[in-house]
Amino acid sequence: MKRLLLLMVLLTTVCFSFAQVKNVKEAKSAAGGTTPDFKKAEDLIGKALIDPTTKDDPNTWNIAGYVQKKINEKEMENAYLKKSYDTLKSYNSILNMYHYFLKCDDLAQIPDAKGKIKNKFRKDNLVQLLIERPNLINGGIIYFNKSNDKKALEFFATYIDAASHPMFESQNFLVMDTIIPQVAYFASLAAMRMEDYPSIIKYALYGEDDQETGKLVLEYLAIAYKAQNDTIQWIDVLQKGAKKHPDHPFFYGHLIDYYSNHSQYEEAMKIADDMLKIYPMNAFYLYVKGYLCHNTKDYDNAIEFYKKTIEVNADYAEAYSNLGLIYCLKAQEYTEQSTTVDIKSTQYKEEQAIIKKFYEEAKPYYEKARLLKPDQTELWLQGLYRIYYNLNMGKEFDEIEKLM
Image (tube, rainbow, N blue to C red):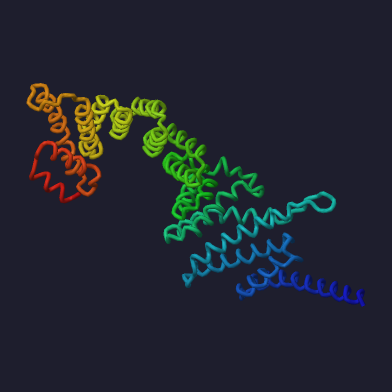
């Protein structure tokens, strides 16, 4: 009885296996006939791709790619004849064809029982993939412009991934294909819009040397590492970016913030000085130098660099705000150091005059910050409240107090 059951199971398995092999053949016929039935072809080959008896056969994947090739050819024929055609269907068939032919090649490269590799598919499939390779970019751009970032990334990623596939070894794409860095930029940007940080980390490095977009790619890479809490890689990318793209303030600014927040002012100051050697008239770098002096309570040098900042850029509201703040801090420190308690004494009057002068010096800077950025009250509201109070400017104080 057990032998009979075993025989029945074996016969059923063999029959099912033959059925799947038949599906592969019928899928090719359905796609390649004079009146192709692509729905039927995709359905038949789809079953064979997941069936244990045929899913590891390279020919199964070869026919799957063939079906997609035929779908694309039909759409292109319709376009040539000025008939209705589906652009997205055409590009997706190319994407699918890539996936299937590459998988076919992987399986065909597995040695047989005698250790020999008999890959009869590579030559023809390689020709087809090379022809359609630029359309992976075109398809990605279409989806990118439609804000379908997930699909766009799939196209861009396939373009980049294929470059290192053994099937394309003779093409040496990673060296010869100068378009890859630009595709890596779009791949990184699509991933950035989805906050897909692992994909950014994977593809950004392909685009970091591009003259136009390399700085943006490294910026996305830094953001990705920070989001993944990989501080070591984050700092490494920021340092690399600052060195390769000194004109892009993102790297410099974040490095300064990091070192400042960790009280590593000597390191931060070194970076600031290095950047000013390259760009001595850059308002942002001058501002940061002033900010670092400010944080280390080197107020006189901070004032000098903040003033240089507004000489270069008269609309730099943050520099005006910080100038006002420093004069207020000077007033506060002088007040705390004053020891005279006799308000009728000459020394007391002299001390109060000095304190008043600090607030008078701060006043125009805060007022300018308000004029430049009235909506950013954090730049001027508290400062003007304090100044108008200490200068006994009742009308102005009342107006500010209502905004508190």
